[in-house]
Length: 112
Ligand code: HEC
Image (cartoon, rainbow, N blue to C red):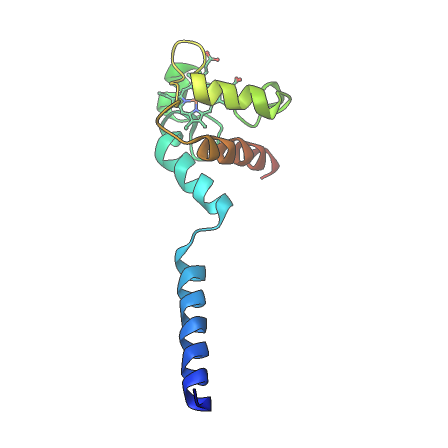
């Protein structure tokens, strides 16, 4: 293998790594996208639940102490199995990892 081939090979590797870095969303971004797609209709994009649907359903502000003081396991359970009559269960619709990501995202919402 001559020097030029090695250089071409490493350039291709570098390009591959760049493409991966650009197309693979960061974990937090992923949860944010998911939240907007699946949860914001009722909970609003900021988690406040202040939209018309949220008001109608009487959702709790996800940033409030009542929610934030719960453990990750409790929030996980609300998302997995639903809560009350109107919070849908996402068991089987989202993976455990996605639900975990959403719990993290709910924590982030409170810090904004
Ligand atoms: C159809 C409307 C709707 C959608 C969609 C929805 N929720 Fe909810 N959610 C509710 C309602 C209503 C409650 C309040 C339930 C209660 O306490 O009676 C709730 C409660 C919760 C709670 C518990 C809050 C508390 O007070 O303990 C969490 C956590 C939660 N939702 C997260 C999510 C996440 C994450 C998603 C998206 C994957 C989502 N919700 C999608 C309506 C919705």
